Amino acid sequence: MWAWRGFVLSSLASVMLLATAAHAGQGDGYPAQGTALQQLVPAADYTQALRGRPLALGILRARGQGYVPSPELHAYVKGVLLRLLANVKLPPSFKPDVRVLAAPEFTGECTPDGTLIVTVGLLEGIENEDELAFVIGHEVAHAIYRHEAKNWTKKSQYYAVVSGTASDAVARSQALTAAGFAIPYVGGALNLAVHLRKLSDNVLMPQMERGQEDAADALGFDLMVKAGYNPEAALAVMDKLAQQEAEAAVAAEQAKAAAKKSSNTANGVNIGMQVLGVALSGGTNALAWANLAVAGFGAAVDSMAEDATSHHPAKQREELLSTYAYREYRAAPIANVTALPWSPESASPLKAGLTPLLAHYTSAENAAAYVADASQGTAGGTRAYIAASTASPTADHAYTEFVAAEYYQLEKRPALSQIALIRAVHGPEPSWEVYSRLSDIYIAHNKYAKAQALMDEAARRFDNSPVVLPKRIEVLRGNGREAEAKALIAECAKYEIGELTDACKRAAGVS
Image (cartoon, rainbow, N blue to C red; front, top):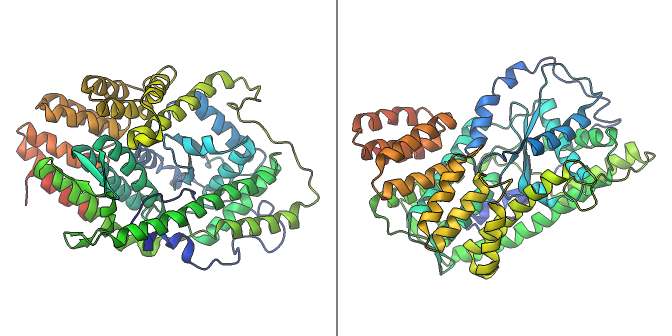
């Protein structure tokens, strides 16, 4: 798993520093001599792991803005994966896939079933296909070795519950107070969602052991060299990681300074997270959701911080990889880099389709920055970004339409905000967040029949992900279906996530 983004804002700085405080080992995942590929002995059968794919896909689908609904983009990244695995002897049961997550972070991940995740932020941040090949090579190496993060399913569901409900708390409030300044809640929702994910990826999200990361670096490097990619691209990736780590260190210091200014507590949980300061005025229901957000993060950090394993610092990883590359590949010819299909110099037939897609996602990110902080742009420029990002081929993508909905809400144009959410819900790959936000609009107008239909559809689409359950219960109760609402509490309890069970009870009106 790559965790390459700065923390930007977190008053849980002492936990955040886990990513860099541990003393790095000596690359115990690298072979003592020869290449990892030469010594590779894959498992005889991967069928059991593959059976977990529907669950893993469902968990990731409920995260952030879900997957990017582009067959062209999926085919492209899958093509890079297939090039890396060409002529590698693997059993027929080894069937990895790769998906693009609609998230702005620069990150990659491997789920236990062999699904590789790369983000839009990563695709925007790399400079050539060779860098992408190293990232995908690293992740598929985890799948080949059957590296599985401890308690991946439970932790991933925990993360979905905590980050999803915290974002929902902000959406229901009237203002977000961050570092002493009042910010409109729609911008706060975007900001908080990003910050929580960055926190979660480094503390709550399941992580591989350090030796496993070294092994994945070595085999991923072998695969990219074998496939004819430029090996220097792997070191360029490490440079990007080093920059992220430097930004993280600065952000952690800022977070610690901010935490000293706040000694507030809630439910017995110290919330240095008060630097995010949700100022609620939405009544007891909104307060309950905010309490879940705060208590959930406190409990999550307490119970899972000990499992947060760190990579070697990026510079040390680069040194280990450089030593390995010199030892095994110093006589190998250096290939020219391969341009990304959406780069100006590309002659790829995919360029016409993928260039506007990535450009529209970038426009949405620029608009989101303005919505979160008006100093990050202009009203006129943001209107242009919204118009561009919601045009074909991304007119009904959850990522672009969610940002548009937040922008229109900020501009006090609720009808347009609702239209954007409806368009996203009816799109090819809607996210949980667009369902959640649209249902809030229906609830606010006492349109519980519409909210009920929306939640029934969401339960089917997201395989009744735990993050869906509290809102489903709330809507059932609003429709007067008290018995059905209370019956779902038992389903919440099955996940063994205390914060989820508490939220479900509050939604059902059970003390």
